[in-house]
Image (cartoon, rainbow, N blue to C red; front, side):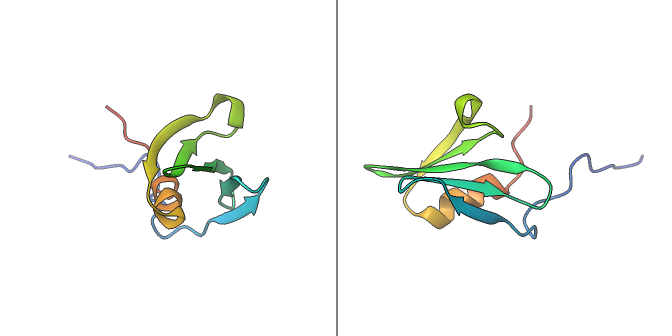
Length: 78
């Protein structure tokens, strides 16, 4: 039996952030855009996707760092 990793783990990957507005941050790594972090009244929403219009919400987090970590991790697949 051979195990193959389809997508490398992003846990150790370096990410960069770019503030688009006061309430919106773009999160990317060296290869591509991972998603966006949007400030909400109750925390920070992590949106996964390369384009803001088609990004899907991963979750709402209490801190900006937790939202960044949610985008750094690989998406769950069934």
